[in-house]
Image 1 (tube, rainbow, N blue to C red):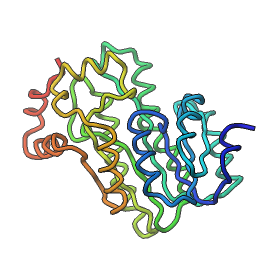
Image 2 (image 1 turned 90 degrees about the horizontal axis):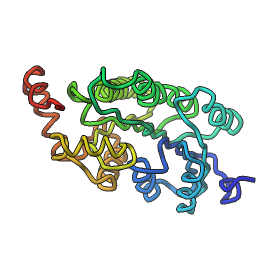
Image 3 (image 1 turned 180 degrees about the vertical axis):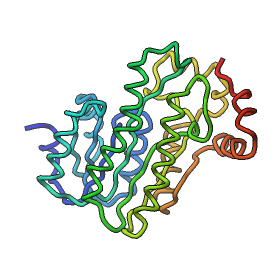
Image 4 (image 1 turned 90 degrees about the vertical axis):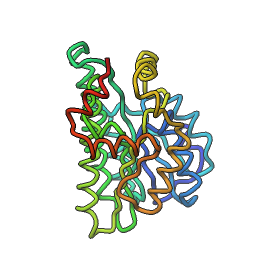
Length: 263
């Protein structure tokens, strides 16, 4: 019997969190633990089983782990089967799993771009599709986007485009689900120096203009959960992010692109 099955009894209400065991996902999960009722189980999804089990042991609430690489179609099977078999009420879906990709488009292997799109875009759609049949009035969906969603980003072209997709998708889905009473919130933090980025990518961030907006993941998570509780459509978690959003709205895109050149 696995560790998660030994821990505590299951409940019929669940919060599903992807990319849960480290970085911003871990901060979100800890913040959610203080907000959600204790009779809501956590279903935590990430790639590394050992890290998931260690992280899950922090919580007293019912907690279940699903080791899964969400870029692989077959890794959704266990999650789908658990939903079909147990038919829980999904009170919250946190679509947080994602990865970064810094550098000129042509300088990076196509597989890097494929992997990023699989995780940052396709995984969000698949998880939303799986969870929605088990959601109802007052359920919530949270998407982790980024300040990068507000304008094209040379040197982060694929990443920024993926986050722009999530922002657009989340805002549209919110309107579609309004009559069903299901809320959708999109959070747009600035970069955080978490395991989301490789050491090389962290160095690239610190060498670029983006270093001015680096955020603390715990603070960003708390601001995100406050917005989620209020069922806000969008939250920009830091001052620099709000400034970038305003500048992207105010200034011509061509000028902004010249100002933020990666190299």
